[in-house]
Amino acid sequence: MSKKIKTARLSIFSNLFLIALKVIAGLVSGSVSILSEAIHSGMDLLASLIAYFSLRVADKPADKEHPYGHGKFENISGVIEALLILGAAGWIVYEAIHKLISANYEIQMLELGIGVMAISAIVNFFVSRRLYKVAKATDSIALEADALHLKTDVYTSLGICIALIMIRLTGWNWLDPIIALMVAMLIVKESYVLLKAAYAPLLDSSLKADEVKAIEDILQNYPVRYHDLKTRKAGQYRFAEMHIELPSTLPLQEVHDLCDDIEEKIKSKIGPIEINIHVEPIVP
Image (cartoon, rainbow, N blue to C red; front, side):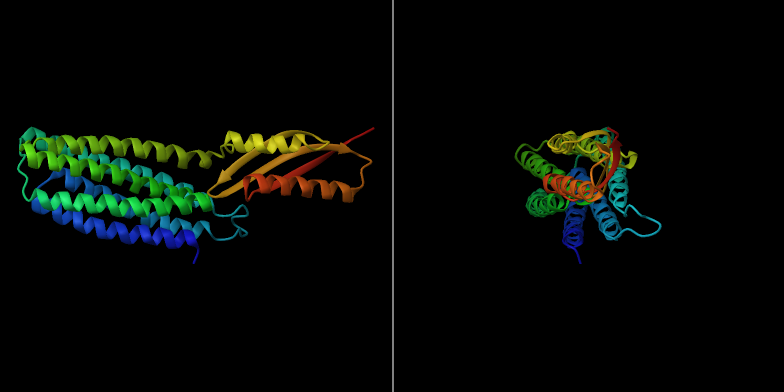
């Protein structure tokens, strides 16, 4: 089992634990902000499950039906996760506005809610840090999306914890739905960032500008002319193709060795990438 899949399983188990705590605390206290966090964690759990299964598919080697591999399953997972988070934000907004209109601000057992939110922030801090570290090491958009969810949970859990402390000290129960609305706005922002990052590779967008420039800098160090440089990304997999011009009198073995050297230099600079070089002769 790969490191990515093991890390995705860690996210699933941590979300299950936190959902149980938040649902109990939310129902007992009557706090809509705690229940909003429970819903947020529920969406995170569903997103973690989607990420887990998408990683299992994305890690499969290329086959006859998918000659370029299965990397885009990670991007599809990221898009689904972003839409789920957006739906969760809509539910939180509905519940918070309903509570404001009905003026039902009663909250009980604030200490329980404060404790649960503090535990949630601590657990998600360490789990998200682990996910983000593995995501960067493996270049996984699915794990990065999961890490982003949990990182947002850290901020929202801390915000709600502070709000509940303020309610405990001041008795201003109306702060509860207001904080829930603020949580929803953060979630909307999170879903937009994730959707943008996950959707772009589905359109075969180019690699990042610094990666393209690194390839161009390497090509300029060789006695060749190049054109039609194209790049794209699918999950953790990168692809590049280019045309280079070489003298027609150059022996085939030298051409082959030169292309191999170019490929190795690019791979050593930006990591795993599949490169296709089309050689065109320069007629004397």
